[in-house]
Image (cartoon, rainbow, N blue to C red; front, side, top):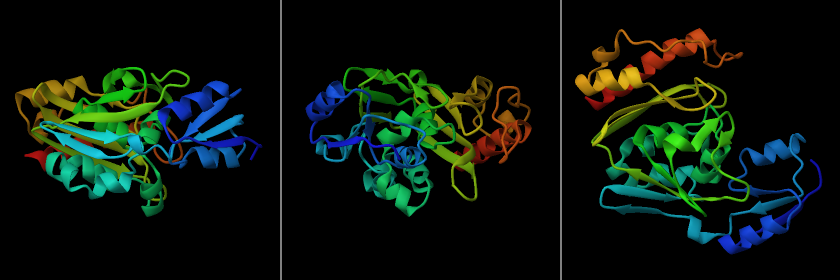
Amino acid sequence: MYAFEYKKAFSLEDAKSAFDSADDGTFMAGGMTLIPTLKQRLAMPSDVIDLGGIEDLRGIFVDGDTVSIGAMTCHAEVAASTDVKNAIPALAYLASLIGDPQVRNRGTIGGSIANNDPAADYPGALVGLGATVHTTTREISADDFFTGMFETALEDGELVTKVTFPVPEVASYRKFPNPASRYAVVGAFVAKTKDGVRVAITGAGPTVFRVPEMEAALNTSFTPGAIADISVPADDLNSDLHATAEYRAHLISVMAKRAIADCV
């Protein structure tokens, strides 16, 4: 681990001031990815700005047909929230599948989506539900937020403050997890919303993506059989020691059908 300055912020103003005064600062939410990265000397920030003291970034709120989750809310809180379970049970279930108890009690929704690991679960929920990411400067549609592997639309110094999820008619998340890390080899989030069906796939490609062909078929017939003849080409999918691109393409269809079956 390289030497760095540690600063703890207790407000968004603290965080901005610390970032602006640093030569090469970085924010830390739960630290589930950043700390291992620092320990392996894969990053060398001048300042690590801990967001753990900003209470305004925590909490879960339901207002009509919208669920808002503060950026520093940990996965375990989302998984255990009665409000989330009542409004979007698939979202609470997804949170319960992330990592292990230690990760779920330290990792945060804001940190997870800002990191945008291609195998992370939350991007599937954001895109599958048509969520909105709120930052210190603007609102970003989930469809526009995840731009590439470990890349998002966030600009330097811009912080996620909360995510708002519209409540769907019905939704489900199914994933094929890596048995060691519990990351998604492939995950499928399917939601029937007021604007139509959305199908979001995580784990399979460089970043989360939708499957328009499946969505069109499911808008006609919301049954697993509606996508029986639809497959996703393996060309642009990830291939590594855990699964080939062809296997991931197969899993997309399997996980999507299981998610749809949960809904009907």
